[in-house]
Amino acid sequence: MTTSLSAGGTPRLAAADRIGRGLDALSVGHGRAMAALLALCLLLFLPGQISLQPMDRDEPRFAQASKQMLETGDLADIRFQGEARHKKPVGIYWAQAAAVAAGEALGVPHARTQIALYRIPSLIGAIASVLLAYWAALAFLPRRAALLAAALYGACLMLSAEAHLAKTDALLAACATASLGALARTWLAFRDGRPPTGSVFAAFWLGLALGILVKGPMVPLFVVLPALILSVMARSGRWLLALRPLPGLALTLLLVAPWFAAIAWKSGGAFYAEAVGHDMLGKVGAGAERHWGPPGAYALAFFATFWPGAAFAAMSLPFAWRARREPGVAFLIAAVLPAWLIFEAVPTKLPHYVLPLMPWLAILTVLAMTRGALDPRLRGARLTALLVPAIPVALTLGLCLAGWRLDAHTIPWPALPLLAAACGVAALAWMAFARGPVAGAAERALVLGVLASCLLGPAVLGVAQRALPALKVSPRLASLRDRMPCADPQVASLGYREPSLVFLVGTGLALPPDGAAARQFLEAGGCRLLFVEARDRDDFNAAWPVGRGVPAPLAEIEGFNLNTGRRVFVTAYAVAP
Image 1 (spheres, rainbow, N blue to C red):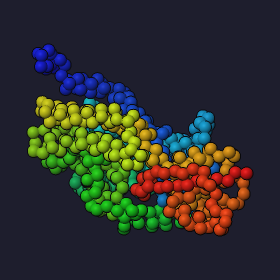
Image 2: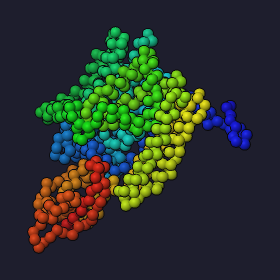
Image 3: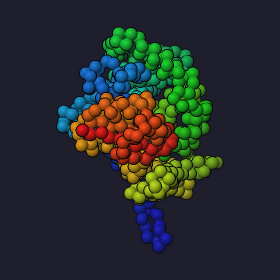
Image 4: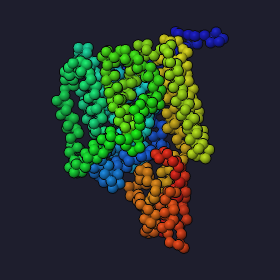
């Protein structure tokens, strides 16, 4: 037993020994390791699934389109209200619609407006990507290190965020990890002169096919780049024959062709013109939807999005360069570097684009750790590791500042104990790396970083966001509809057009173009509710004849629009027979 002496000379079990014993216990067998990863994912991803409001604008657009599939029964076309949504394939909409239909069958009240049900595919995708990362890491690392690599990936902030959003990216990460994991096993088996083991055929081709249904060409892009580079390196592509390309391509076509043919016939080719010509090529040619960023933006954002492992991943890069001719390291470089450079070159920058590359960076980080490359004695290592406590400290201060400025001097007090604990454990991670014994310093720091993430994620997404009502404008407006003294009122919104309001209020939400149209809506008879944003209030007031005046407001809602980055002030007017 490893012991150390306290100030009074009393022997105690060293913290390093306890961390090591914990890893040993959790990695006794694959079943136990996967159970530990599942528990970690549930701890990280479940808090906030129900209470977090629909996050404008992409999430409610996906959820609303899935809801309309259930309302219309049309499982081929994708629409947001009356507008065709020809941007992404149908996979995520089918998955969300199935989750909501299951919720309805189980008796969930108001299932079609419960955003948590639409997030279930993302939750499952995030968990699956962590378990698949463990499976992939076993090709590079022993079981204990593979467990740590998968946990490091699961603890990263970007994956936790995507697990809470009803979008494509968590599910895409799972598909990409499956296909790339199979490719990695095939490559390493080829270099060892043996056939690949495990279900590489099913993992590769199902990951590819489902990835195409979820987000078109992205998984093929992630797979083709390393396959080409490694084939050039090996001066042959024959190693890919172990994946059985002909039956694999046939299986992929069998799974994806029916819907792609159906949408081509139904839309008259408009889906491909919009999805390829506008959505994909538009992002390549210019910064789409105000998401432009310079080259290097992903590298800078990485230190936050891949926290707590980002600092150590940066330290592993010199090792990767030195060991670049090793088959395992060569694969990791080929899986990450070409795709990363492409994303840096494309003007449109969104942090989640590089999420499918993060499992491989986690594996590289732990591989470097096992080779002794994450050494606190190296120049700049201790300073770089300060990013581990810096991120939770900055996030805690940012949340307090946001509450103080946006919610009338409100501080998210319920979250502060968890936030403070996350900062404290992150500080311990830095101390374990910077001041502890050199042997095992990086491992202890990584484990403590994962534990800090287990506190930080639930604190932010599960607790702090509840204490910031200024961010929940659409839910507060929708609650006014629910308090109307009549059933099923007609609702319209002038100025405030966030997709979250459409999702929460209903597909029939009217969006009048000006004040005159809004006045006509309010006077059309029956039970009606109208929202008017402050910037359109003068136009709305001017639409009423002299002497009559605007009706008395029902309520006034003030908040902050995260999507536009500005305050909003919305007045509600009601007419009830």
